[in-house]
Length: 172
Image 1 (cartoon, rainbow, N blue to C red):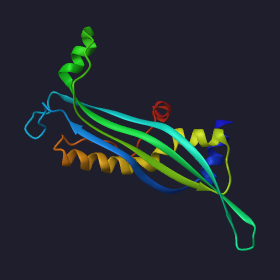
Image 2: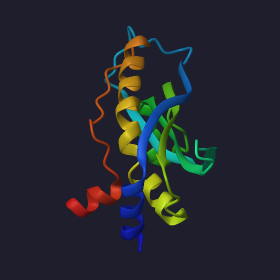
Image 3: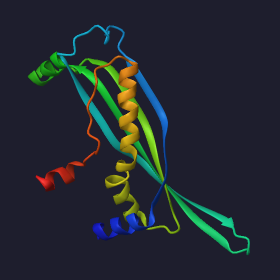
Image 4: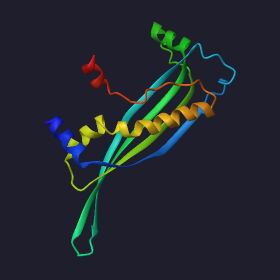
């Protein structure tokens, strides 16, 4: 049923807008990325759907016949942080230390879709989890790369297409 639900969502949902709702970026007080070596650092990433909402909007047509439109919004929590590799190895060695976070960039981005009909909760959930990220990804990627440059952090390479773990495993 999941494949049918996803196809139903893909047929009726049309991308309307993508925007950034929240952004946060910082560098640790004791870290100077402009003059530091990046040899002992690594990057960690976050990409998760935080919530999805469906709103029904009814407006009157000129012939007094009401018209209903649905707006579907998917909210993504995205992030990248630069960590000390030395601390990461110590953490994995059983010393129970968390990696030292040297810098962090986070954002909440929203993808908005419109549809003339409600495709159903299952269809919306499957679409939010597996497809909506493709619309947000180019905006996140541009923001992350430009913010790293502004903060003099190391250049980060993230792929142009974000692949979900499920698709990566089936293609291998």
